[in-house]
Amino acid sequence: DSSEISEIENYIQENADTDKKSELFGIAEDKNMIFVSIESFQNFLLDSKINGEETTPFLNDLKERQDTIWFKNFYHQTAQGKTSDSEFIVENSLYPLGRGAVYFTNAQNEYNALPEILNKHGYTSSVFHANNKSFWNRDVMYENVGYDKFYGEQSYNVTEENSFGWGLEDKAFFSQSIDELKQQEEPFYSKFITLTHHFPFEIPEEKASIDKYDSGSETLNNYFQTARYTDEALKQFFQQLKESGIYKDSIIVLMGDHYGISEFHNNAMGEFLNKEITPYEHIQLQRVPFMIHIPGYENGGIREEVVGQIDVKPTLLSLLGIEAENDLSFGVDMFVEGSKKFTALRDGSFITEKYVYTEGTCYDRETGEPLESENEACKPTKKQVEKELSYSDKIIYGDLFRFYDFTDEK
Ligand code: GP9
Ligand code: MN
Image (cartoon, rainbow, N blue to C red; front, side, top):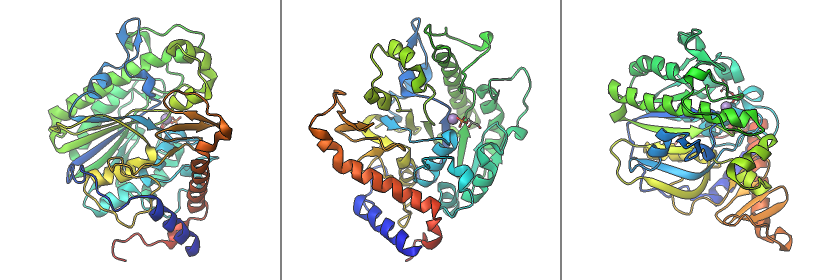
């Protein structure tokens, strides 16, 4: 009820420097925001090579540019809801559930989601994703959180020639989306969800530009070829955005949704990375790309802060110059220095500037060495992580936003 949500509101206010503004506040004011969710993409793909060939030449170049900001310690925080969890976290700055997918279990809740907020500030919003609209219950959830339009499989021309794996291939997906994108009323917020680089990562020989890896895991062997394919699709998409004139009035955000290689492939992963995949390394492997590309910007570069998907919503709102003062988020603006205390994963593991905690062990983040003395160092954060996850669960299970007033005048 309303006393529970007040307690959570107090917790959030005590723990976040919500009133601080970053230097980048408003840098993308009134620009279009194009958000690309890249399927199953982990950071270890970046700068990797297969038989001397870069896996992701486009992203490798992009992440080093001065018109791009790359958060290299950005973690996905998804659980069983996979892509839909990543969408949920980004839209709401809430955690996904420990079991099941919020997109199914609580699609009718009251939310104060990113598209709704943007709509109130004059944006139109849309989603492009060439799969069945009801997959992950998206059609229901999208309507609830305020997307104006959803272009699903039916909006695309899907043929045998232009599809493999889960359906329409990413290159055709982006090409066919551009005309619709041009029709969006500006400024717009449009989310694109790729599909090709998805388990089991199979690609027809003639569409693969690099070799397979060679290990005992067929999944890992395939993983690089579809990653390269999607890297090429992204390169082409940037090109098409430029040709269509959309590019210069937009900022483009790229994010990996979750891991693609599970711990079942630890042996092959260890071989590829040339190190043993300890529980510490497993957590470090949960880093996914997060890049903010701002055409014309010259102060970009690589950021070291430990951040996660939970921080995307407040960060994007800040870039767009939207205050949303009475929003309730567990994440923070990534550009406000010192605002971030920890990044919590759904299973209670967490990462701070100094430590990585998982499976009951506290590790030094720099060295990966387990710390002795009964994990004292991680204890206070562990408590807070548990509290925060349970608060997020309470909001979702109790539909507590029904009792909260998000409007700016209070
Ligand atoms: C399905 C796509 C993949 O539409 O988003 O979903 P996933 O299996 O990654 O959750
Ligand atoms: Mn996914």
